[in-house]
Length: 470
Image 1 (tube, rainbow, N blue to C red):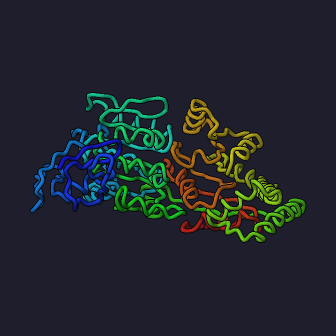
Image 2: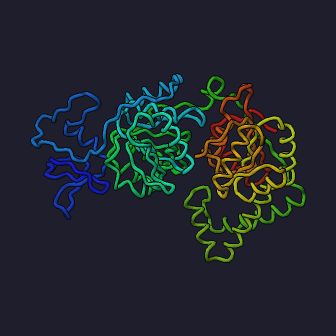
Image 3: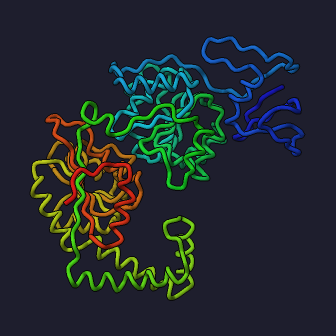
């Protein structure tokens, strides 16, 4: 039997009829399977070898195996950064190795997942593709990989994305670029490292692991579970969760101690009257059509109707107006003002749900602002000034939730956000990197009482202890 890599799949020439995972392709009169079945097929044949183990064909397998699919080289690497792994990092690496170098590691933001990735690359000793969700994170990985392995490679670290198309033995890319080119390069890498892997189950992105033969796979994330339950797909594509540590287990020794403070404010009489009027208009429409808005399908159906039903459109506008009243409540901004005065000597990040509100906060309180519209050079300068202490506070929307290396902060203030537990955990993680004075980090959440924000807050805080209610 001859195994060939063919446009993101494996073509199995002269394969026996009992070959697993494969389907007959009438176009070529041969069996074909997805590329990620490469290792499983070699294991079925008895031809898989890990390291220096000698592979032998299984008893009774009458066909010699010719493997032309593998195009990835072996590498002999040692990270140039001579830093001893923390206990949990070593335990995570050992668990991954013990599971055949396949699986996911779940660690909090700021706990050193990138360092773990470097250790895994060196241990696997094969060419590696690292997939990241953003260009910023791709550039951060590229700098780290260059520092760790640059002098040991004959070619520079490759970059696929952001206008670059250089594929070498160790290459870093974005999800979008990997999706576009994986059918072309899926035979070139023996290890697939997926950062922020909770994005991977999306219909397009899941083709990245499906269309590469990489027998070794490592997924990294701080927030493994998805609200839609599709994280269950990761076990087949990457491997099971082999190691996990929660924030509370690392707080104190490896991350900052922290407290979460839930603060509730009231609407003014004028705000309450307008809010109730708009919210009731929205609820009347939703109730009359029995939308289940807490399920993705229900909310999508609601949005679909707003595109052709004038009453539905008015209900959507009413919802948006009510949300804005709750989000920008007068007493919420007064509370923010008090917190900023209280923490004027601290490093604080103000989180909002959208760009408009972030810009409003920036103008009202004269603090720098970062959104997805902020140009890279400007964002880099703001973050550098935040790191040095020239700026002690900054406002942001969702762009700093993940994918950008944020300097140490010890205060977070959530003014608005989604019901996502992942977003809440990521925002908490932004303030948990240990500081020199080892003072506890504080995450404030300011919500407007008796509004939609109350339920949203309850949803996102599930599983995270709230120490103080105010």
